[in-house]
Length: 598
Image 1 (cartoon, rainbow, N blue to C red):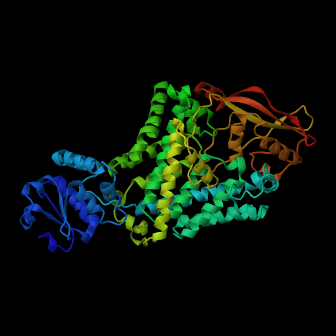
Image 2: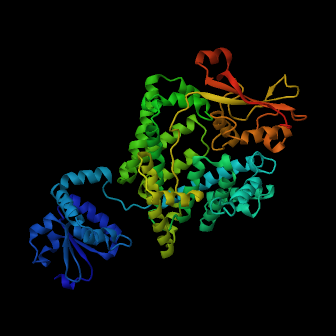
Image 3: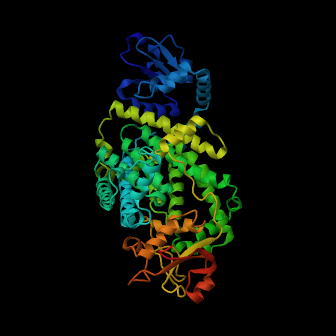
C-alpha cells in the first residue's frame, strides 16, 4: 500500500495523549512534507503490520516502500527539515547510537503517561515551535544602547586618557609597537594605524555614537554592526590599560555574534553558549582560587566595601546580618554554578534560568557600578525566551514593536556556512576555556585561543576570583612649597569621607577604576600613574577634566605626591554622628614627592 504514497506518512496511536502532543508539534515544523494519521483510522491500509506494532511505536511509511519505526522513524522525520539530518546520520554511522536511542525510545513508550506529565511540565501543552525573532529584535536594540553607552562614555574621557596630551597617548603607543616589534597589525587591530591624531580619536567616538543610535533605533544593516565592532575593537586596542575590562571583551564578543544574527538559528545557541561561559566561569574561578571568603560564604560584605565603585546601597547592604550575607553568597553560587546548565534545557526551565540570572544582575547593578556589564548580560538572557512567551505576555503589542518577527529575510548559504564554521570554533575554543580552571590543556587549543585573542571573539571570563579584604586608596596631593599639600578630588572614587558613593553606571570613569587597581600594587607595576602625575604637573586640561576638582586653578603645583590610605565603611552609629560614609587610616607613601624636573 505504501508504494502508492506521494509523501512520507507517520502513523501513531491516536488514543495516546503523549503521542498526540508531539505529533501536533511535528505537524507544525514539517508542514505539508509529511502526512500524519492515527492507526485507528488508517491501520487497515497497512495489513502487513500487526496492530500491536502501531501501539508500541510510531511508524513512518516512505513513498519508496521502506518502513521505519521508533527512534529511526523520528530521526527520519526530522531529517526532512533543512539542517536537521545530523541525528539520522549519527543513527546510521555512529556505532552504538542506534541501539541506545532505540532503548531510550522503548523506555519512553512504556511510560507515556509519565512522559506526558514531564512534557507538560517542561515544554507546556501544546508544544510551541520555538522561534526567537522577538528576542533578536530586542537584543539588537539592547546592543545598540550598550554600544551607545560605551562609545559615549569613552569619548568623554578619550582626550585625557589616550589623546596627545593624555595619560597614555595612543600615537606613542602604536609608534612603540611598530618600532620594537615591526608590523603588528594583526596583534593590535585598530583603525588608529591609519592615523592617531586627536581628531581621529574624536571622529571614531562620534561615529560610534551615531551608528549606535541607528542600531538602537532599529536600522538592521549588517554593515552597521560590522563597523560598530571594528570601531570598538579599535578603541579597546588603543585604550591600553584603560580598556582592558572583561565587559569590553564581552561587548566585542557579543558584537561579533550580532553580525551573524539572523543568518542561522545556531547564533541563538552561540549567545547561550556565551552566557553559559560567562556565568559558569564566574562561579568556577571563585572556588578554584581557594579564596577562604568564598568558601566560607563571607565574601559579600567584603565585596560591598572593597569593590571599585560601590553605590550608596552597598553601604546599607554591608550592614546586614551575617546570616543574610551567607545566604546571599549561596544564591550567587547557585546562579553561577547550577543555573547555567539550565540554559540548554526545555523552554519552561529556561524561563526560570533567565529569571534567576536577571535577578542576580539586578542585585549586582544596585550595589556596584560595573558600566554596561549588567545590562549586556541581561540582554543575553533574552535568547532564553521564545516568541510564544512574548506573545502571551505582551499580546498584539509584539507585532507592533517587533515587526522584524515577521519580516526577516532568508539567509544565504554562505552566511549559514560562516555561522556553523564559527560555531565549531567557538565550541572548541570556549570549551577549553571552560576546562582551563580544571587544569585541562591542549597545545592545539592554546594556539587557537592565541590566534583569536587579539580580536576578542571568544574570551574567558570570571570576575572577583579572589576578594580584596581591605580597601587601599591612592590620594594625589599637590604643593607649591613642599610643606602644604592639597588633595585632588576624583569624580567618583572615594576621597572626601563625607561624600556619598555615587550612581554612575552605565558610564565608566576609567581613570577612577584604574586608580583602584593601582592601589593594589605599586607604581613600578603601573607606570601610567607617573605619567598621570606628570600631566597634573603640566596642568593638562584634558587630564584635569577627568577629575572632580582642581585645587590649583591658576597654575599647576610645583610638586606632587601620592599617599596611600586604607578606607573602610563607617558603622551606622559613626555615620549618624559624623555624617561620613567612609573612615580612613594613612598607610604610607605611594609615590614620593616629585616635580617636572624628576
